[in-house]
Structures are given as C-alpha cells and as structure tokens.
Length: 259
Image 1 (spheres, rainbow, N blue to C red):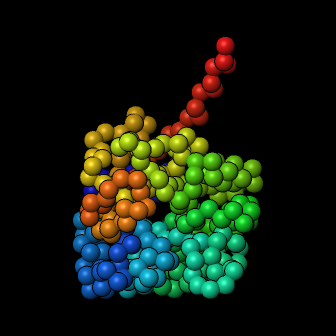
Image 2: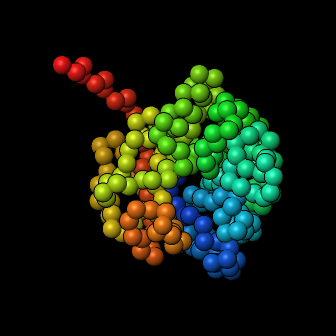
C-alpha cells in the first residue's frame, strides 16, 4: 500500500481509503465488519464516515468493528448535517459542534478523531465561530485535523482566509459536492488552499490515468449507489472516491491587464 500526506499536514493516509455511506440499512453489521477488517488487512488506514451516514448507524458500526484496532487506522467523520428537530440540531454553531463531537466519539468508541469535517457550509453561522470551535477541539485533543465538505471554492477561500487571519487551525481537506465537468476534475478549490481533495462519486466513465504535476492520485472506494438526480450525468452502480493530495500549492498568476 502506498501512502500520501493529508493535504499540507504531516499525516500519512493510504492512497485507497474506505467510504462507509452504505453501512447501516444497506450493509448490516457483520458485513460491515468484514469490509473494515479486510480493508485494514490490505493496508488501508483511512476510514471516512459521517454522523448521518447509514441512518446514523455507520459510526456505531465502525466503532464496534475497530475495537482493539484503533491505532491502525485514521478515522474521519463529519458534522453540520441535520440530526433532529429543532433550530440548533444542524449547522456550524459552537453549540451544535460541541454536542455532536462527543456523540461521534462515543459511537466510534474513541477519544479523538483524526479528521473532523464540516459537512456543509452554514450561511447563518459566522465562519469565525465555526473555525474557532474546530480549533478548540484540536487544542483539546479531541480532533487532530479539520476539513470541509460541499463547500464551493469561494467558501473554502473564506475559511482559509479567516483561519489565516486568526492564526488558528486551517483546513487540510476539501470534499466538494460537484467535482466533475465534461469528464475533467474541477480544481478550483485547490487553487485557494493546500489541501487534500476528497472527490466523491467519480464513476468509471472518468478513469484517472494521470494527475497534474503537483498532485498525486488516491482512490477511495464507495459501495453506495448515488441518485442520478443529484448529478448531471448518469451514474453506474459502482463508484469511487478519488483524492488529490496537493503536495504543494502556488497562487494563480495575476491576469494581464486588458488592452
């Protein structure tokens, strides 16, 4: 198994990771345990999930299956999705994040998360509040690194700018919602941060045969079938997650003035 740096951090992740969106109603616990054990046996050390995956069962499955093997893997989960009725049961507020991180830790049967991602951009919560809360979790030792999911490029830029201005923990991963256009990977998010790009639902119609000069390619399997209505192209039943580990980043050159 080969390993790559997690964005601009020193953490090494396997070039193939395991997505767990199917753990729960589609894959029962015995099957999920077999999948996880096999993944660890072949050298996969990156396990990605969310507190809402599998009708909120995925984290519990992972915690049970990895009991006694926690140090062999890196666990990534997410926060901000709707967890129930009430105005504070979703989003990036300090209240919601601090409550949900403890729930995730309990389900995963661990005292820390290797990667904690903001699942969705919250337009109603100041970015400073969200990032300061995530930074607090890093300082407390509950979280090692932080990232985001479903952020547009300008939202990633906002988050990175706020973190830089405040001198707090920056994002090391970005999992964009729309990742492909005409069979090509979109790299707009990568031009605003040195981060690993977790690209989900990349289909076999778009084989990755090479990567840009300043990237390396890592695949993350996903057994889930994604509804075609979410995307602009047909989706087969087999999917992959591709990560682009950006080892270095340089800002785009300035545009030449119009004549």
